[in-house]
Image (cartoon, rainbow, N blue to C red; front, side, top):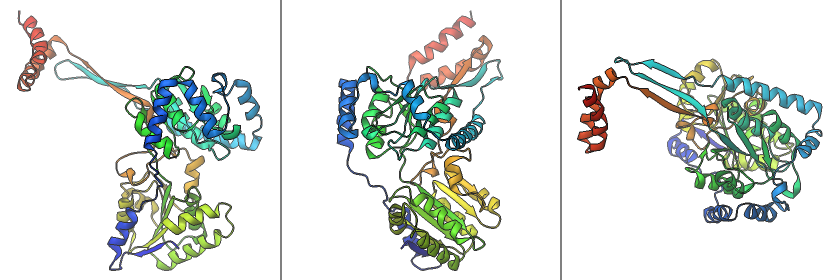
Length: 433
């Protein structure tokens, strides 16, 4: 059974605090293993990647077959049904249109002394996108990672998608095609992250690595950060639904289960101002779990980490939501727009009863790569901004340097950096001749 909490109960605060600090992620101590894998790939390149792929994915490759060939991609893509292709193409179009609006603009202006100041934006040169492999891989994740990079103008995109036992998902290859990906490598794990970060004889190094993965992938991303950029270290999925009694309990139940079915460590929480409605949702979840295909996974998630929280009013719901800072937040209540406007911390907000979170996973347009584990308090979901960088611009005229240079010289002297001051003074002296 999920946890039932009521904000009017005497023990609510410590119980809610325990909910916030609940350890959900199975985090085996893999760092030493990952460190060894990365060192091996750095030292032996392709040979290490090939050996590790044979060991973990039971797939014998050569340097020439690390990446899918054009003929292989065409053969796999041909297996996609017209209906699936149409759905994926619609998703790609909507995701591209949404992210195109995120592109920042360059700026320049004249300062008070005639100096020119500003900034310009430019893409990273190459990005590596990790996609969990096998038949359980998600083509939607390819679109969500690759399209923002393509919109940003990244010149070279590479995917690492492991194919255990040689099994691949044709939709993943089609999604890569639709996203402008140059190379699709059939490797995974920490060895794929190391190859993307440091390069091998066959795999060119990239500047940024994004995409989800298991504990080994997460540990590898932590270790290579600094050599390359990364998007985030994502934890198990989570959803918070704020709903009042004027909702269909079954709708809310399947919304909660939509994240619970991802992973036994996923978390689904309902906040409501009506205790009877909360119980009705719990009953609806139990009924759905009788027939859900992934009921073993979803049931375990709901039993271990699910929660139903009853509050006095929607103001209190907003306050508790901000403390949770959920990855996904659904708001299904009267004045849902007004409630949404008060939320400070959430990865993505889905407003109104007709906006299930699942729309955001596939077809809505906004990115579904989102901050988990309360990190929405200080971070954002994946966007075009993850694939561009800002360069500042400054251009002094003699008059501008004459006006502000003495202050720079003074500050350099105060910090004991003589050469800094002299580099300004040399020019000021030339102006004063």
